Structures are given as C-alpha cells and as structure tokens.
Length: 354
Ligand SMILES: Nc1ncnc2c1ncn2[C@@H]1O[C@H](COP(=O)(O)OP(=O)(O)OP(=O)(O)O)[C@@H](O)[C@H]1O
Image 1 (tube, rainbow, N blue to C red):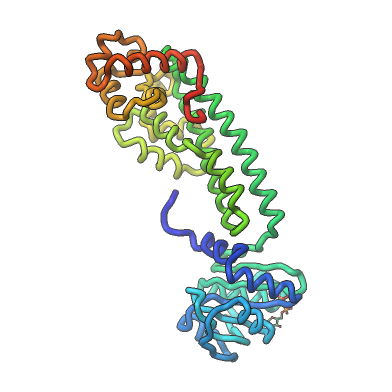
Image 2: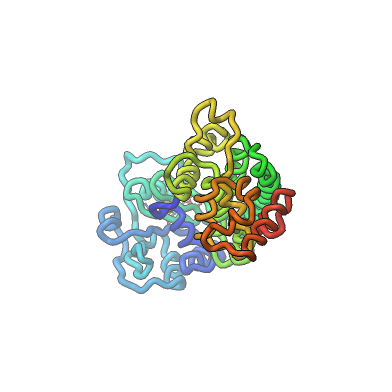
C-alpha cells in the first residue's frame, strides 16, 4: 500500500545513475579506490567520530572524490548539501555485531545499525558498492542486470495483461446470463493483483535505473493502463459490502502475497463470505460494461443501474423503459443496445485495452 515513504527506496533513488552521489561513487570506482560515505547530520554523526577533519564545504561529486582519496570516511549531511567531515575515523560501539569480514564494511554495517543512517561502502578489492541502513544491506546492481530484471518483469506483465483481458472478455457474456460465480470474479481480481504486485517490483528496479528508466517506464505505464480502474468497476459490479469500491480495492492491495492465492480471502472484502455465497452466481450491476459504451456519462450509468438494477435487465429493457431514465434519449438508447449486444457476444474492441 502507498503510505509513508520507504526510506530504502529513497536511498536507491539517491544513489541511482544520474545523481550527484552516484556520480561520486562511480568516479571513486573508476579510480580503482575504495571509500566510506556516511550520510548523517552533525549531531548524529559527531559522537561516532574519533578523529578527522571537520569541514563545511559544499557537496559536489568532485569534492567527494578528492576527499575519499584521504582514506577513512567522508560524512555528508542528509540534505546532501554539505560535506561535514573528511578522513573521519568512525568508532561504532564494539558490542554491535557485524557479518562483514573487511574492516571498512564492518564499520559501515555497525555504524548503520547504531545510528540508522545511510552508510555506503565502496569496495576497493571487489569493485562493489554496498548500502547499509539499520539491518538493511543492499549491493548496488550494474545497469545490465537491472535492465534484464526490468525486461523480465515487463514480459510477465504483458502475459498477465493478455490473460486478464481474456478473463474479462469471457466474463461479459456470463454477466448477461447471470452465470457469473464468485470464482470468476476472484480469478479476475487475482490476475489484476498479481499485476499490481509485479508493478511495484518493476517500479523499484526503475528507481535503481535512475536516468536510464525512461523507456521501460513508458512500457510499464502502457501495460498497467486501466488495471486499477477495471478492478474498481468489477468490485462495484459484484460487491455486497456497502463501502466504496476504492476502499475495497485498497484492502485487496494490502493482502499478503499468500492470501492473493486464495479466492475465498480475495472475495471477503467484497462481502462474499459464507460457503453458500461462494457457491451461488452473483448478478452483475454492469458498471464495468456500461462504462465502455461510448459517450455515456457516469451520472447516466448510475441512474440506469439504480432504476433498472442489473446489466442483464438493462440489456433486455425496452426502448420505452430506457427512455424513462433521465439523460437517455434515442441516440444513447441505441448506443447502449449496440454496445451491450457486442459485449454479450464476447467483443472487446472498445474496452480501452480490455
Ligand atoms: N573505523 C574506521 N573508520 C573509517 N574508515 C575505516 C575504519 N576502519 C577502516 N576504515 C577504512 O577501511 C579501509 C580498509 O579496508 P579493508 O580493506 O580492511 O576493508 P574491506 O571491508 O575489505 O574493504 P575493501 O573491500 O575496500 O578492501 C581503510 O583504508 C580505511 O579507509
């Protein structure tokens, strides 16, 4: 779920290609040197510094590179505006455990655990960059690896999207025959939830790609277009819970991955809970299909469903019945009949990608 900013994601953003910090890191690596960077304000870092130079110099990649040549640690403030210390000898509490073997990395891990700030270790021997924060340890990946990961994610998303489209297309005729079972609804929601989970994964890798993210990001936007909207419409069509569909979808998005595998758990937030409800067909109100009728305003869709009830009844309604709904005249009645009969026959061409 969206919520408080994940600090780790922020660190990946700060160290992504194209940022001043990454520029400094890459230059240190190119020089074949190592380094230790601590990102913390003076009052937090100060007590851990046993020796070194206190500075108040503006943060630039070039300055960081030069100061890293002096060995030990460079400390920059959290806004990445000022270099506070250079050649700093850091003394974390010796009681803090560390899995690391080299001294640079051990100090990095211990400091990160002690003060919960970002510490970056640039390894001279292994040519690797490791971020530490609290218990978190993450090795920066090279661009090629990130590209491979993103393109695998996008390929799977592409397949999921096609499957979602097929499921939705197959659902439409059943809606007119009142033959939609909760398991059908769960299958669609499940597929959409898989997509949204994978989207979060791909987005994380896009953050790491920094300036190289543009093309895969566009591809991701295309693949995810309309997925959340489609989920909300589907929930509106079949829910018995009185809460708004957006709220129910948020609850679905907060499900643990193992719960997404269980149709009964997916259906619970919709208000479909008992064994009997799980076995019985549910009528579709028709928000999803009616939203795909060209130029039919939402207010008219709402009235149609309020007054007529379900999509199969709207489909079977006489012209006179449709005319009685405010906002529907000859042209709209014809458009509704035309579109619904196409959806009934499994046609999806006008469904905005679905
Ligand atoms: N307490 C400390 N504070 C700041 N820097 C330190 C501290 N201890 C060690 N270092 C830095 O670590 C460097 C030594 O790293 P060492 O090779 O032992 O560790 P490492 O983790 O294996 O790193 P690398 O992978 O770069 O070799 C020193 O040159 C020094 O710059």
